[in-house]
Amino acid sequence: MRDWLRALIAAYGAHKLGGGCVSTILIFFIIYWLLGHTGCH
Image 1 (spheres, rainbow, N blue to C red):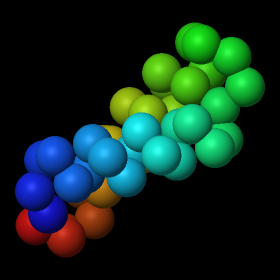
Image 2 (cartoon, one colour):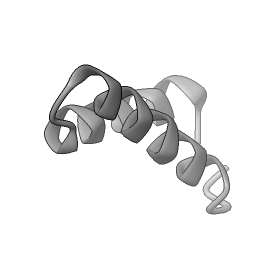
Image 3 (cartoon, helix red, strand yellow):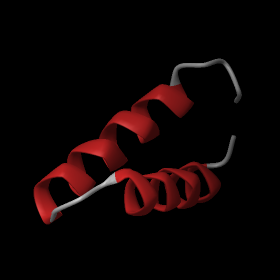
Image 4 (spheres, one colour):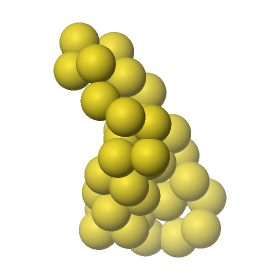
């Protein structure tokens, strides 16, 4: 998976799931990390 696509998906998920600024950033990094480690390269 390309990095920009991975970042876009992570940003969308963080926006939908996050409540505040800090939680949105944490969710973004968690989703970004998970997408990088699922073997979808």
